[in-house]
Length: 499
Ligand code: MN
Image 1 (tube, helix red, strand yellow):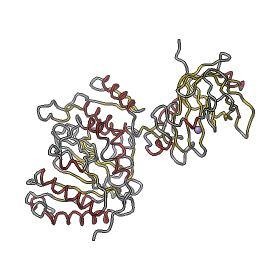
Image 2 (image 1 turned 120 degrees about the vertical axis):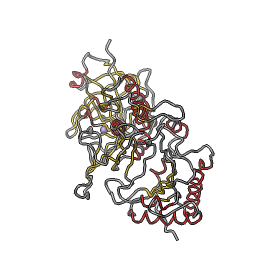
Image 3 (image 1 turned 60 degrees about the vertical axis):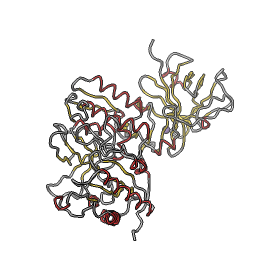
Image 4 (image 1 turned 120 degrees about the horizontal axis):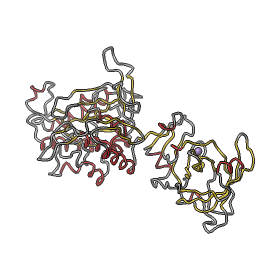
């Protein structure tokens, strides 16, 4: 017996709010827009406008359609299930005749419905949608009383605020859905598909195809008696962390730190988007690049593109602190606590606590993370406006005030050799195309440590280490603690004048 055809109802907030009822018929979605929405109430007749068939790829789309494109707004999967024809034996014929009787088995919609054509309104066919009086009928039942997505439990407001999927109306259906941040089930499917591959092959993940090679290659030496980390394990981590990590990279030029032969070999900067990168890896042409300079950068706007970065042998992700639409206006000010040879981890913690106190004192929120090497950074989200000169000057004032408290720990000398092994509070990273490693990026070091966000309270945890979290442990930490860096994306603040 063939599988029963499926149906979906999407709640779509575009120029007007409506419900889109779509029935799977012969590989396409036969569709009606229902302004007041379907109801189980058999006393209510609902106007439905027959609209053009939609591609099957749109079936479970939930996310955002960007401004300026067809249907711009937000979409949730309000209901889904299977359907049966209850009169006649051919759905297409029934639709053409304007008289369709179906039974829906969804999570919200159940029972028998009739869809009947009543005439034309403008250039649109106007139909009526009614629930039959059957055992599933419920008088007084209204769709807006049941607003949440059956796919993710979210409301349209929540989807709009966290656009994990985007639909590009102008693109071919097969590539119109951009998976910015995959959902749990998609990640599990992707990981299972990777497990199926031998040493190389085509990995289907997040709606994309990616050729992956040398999966058994050891990319990071083991640490503390643990086995080495293979490329397969790195790709697995990258796919699994992508829902959390991609928002810190999206819309920004990305400098890649490549170690194609593994973390134990010398790495090099790769600041150009390779021409052979797959098309879903974004690009940005820097309009101000001088002759001979890198002009086209890679931009990671979706999960599969980040996985490509790892396949490419880039073990570290270093995004710009400005976005490509306004490259001269940073969205973060950076405090980089860069230890010298004689700086202990305890010294780094002293400097971090002093910065915490200073930020509290001036009423500014900063977000700390360990680097995965020896240091610690604080990212300070900034509402766009100030230039790099301004954020650099602000961090310089802040850090010099802190440094004056502990002159025995800090050097302001540019030359490493002149610093006497002391730490450097490197405000000069606040400049265009100067980058710090991204949150959740691996580091090219034994054991595959990760630059992991921490809470301020963890500075007082004696177990905290700058390289203590690895690609083998940080996912569990995200599950338990959530994304401790999220406020760096959502906080809108101005830097106050420092007196
Ligand atoms: Mn619609």
